[in-house]
Length: 133
Image 1 (spheres, rainbow, N blue to C red):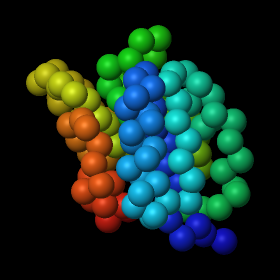
Image 2 (cartoon, one colour; image 1 turned 60 degrees about the horizontal axis):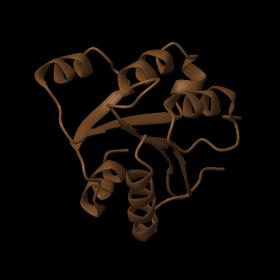
Image 3 (spheres, helix red, strand yellow; image 1 turned 120 degrees about the horizontal axis):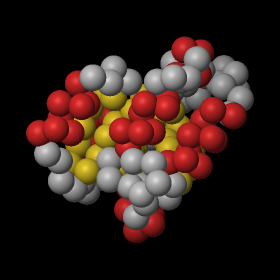
């Protein structure tokens, strides 16, 4: 049975950005759940080891580009190595406070990245993301 609204995962090394993003998503009322990670490695392990048969509704990943240990692009590269039956449950949206031309070009090489948004996250952006699913 499908969830009425998507699940959300926020991956950002800024605890403040995670908190604000979580609150904005919750305010929309259009979510099934929201989980935050300050380390992309932890988020990747969570996704890799999750039971993806629980429901078939999509999980939106809000992903910061610039993070220590594993940055957003390294996360996407690891994610794209996962089995298709796992990847099909997720939609990745990248966020950054600054992006250079090289990052824009790198995004085009990753089919799992749906869209890029400038920070900060907003209710309008969340509405746009939900509308694109």
